[in-house]
Image (cartoon, rainbow, N blue to C red; front, top):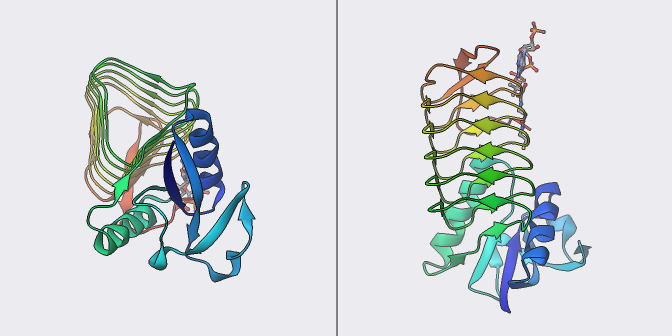
Length: 215
Ligand SMILES: CC(C)(COP(=O)(O)OP(=O)(O)OC[C@H]1O[C@@H](n2cnc3c(N)ncnc32)[C@H](O)[C@@H]1OP(=O)(O)O)[C@@H](O)C(=O)NCCC(=O)NCCS
């Protein structure tokens, strides 16, 4: 099996490791983190091999960091260090992926999620537990569809955006880049770039910085 390395050792990394084991496609060599206090210990049975900025061992891996903005920073750092680094995808065997679905490198599809025909999921996205992405949907790079949320057919989600837990987006909606839809919302109108929106129906509450924490 091809050997890969994992970047990150948070709860989300635990989920990604579990998926990779179940895929039976890759052998995990070890984990690289950005916190010095974790070095030398094991996480999920795998050794923490060192700092992300000194990674080694394989030219293939996955960035298992839940926060969209932090994930992008680390992906960019890895690409600067090694231009030909390859990013693996992690697809839980209990996810359902439809015909002509395109999944970008580094993307994670968690258990129970359904992605229907002709959808395009960008690079380094997270389609989280039991979420539903209907047909002909486009999701931009570094975005997250959180657990239990649903995206209607032909909707477009921009880059670095999050559809939070249990939120619903009806069909043919455009959500911009760097926006966050609050948990449990119902989106029935387009949402622009760089905003926080929530409620039923979802309304823009305020502008949002791309690096704002949401977890
Ligand atoms: C939107 C969110 C980030 C909270 O933002 P915040 O600016 O910290 O908001 P606060 O918690 O301080 O709440 C401020 C007000 O907004 C309301 N509010 C916050 N989130 C809301 C939501 N999703 N729906 C409706 N109202 C909400 C609060 O009730 C509060 O109202 P009040 O002032 O009348 O009491 C948070 O609710 C959320 O949805 N987080 C995402 C969680 C998630 O799914 N993460 C991904 C996991 S994979």
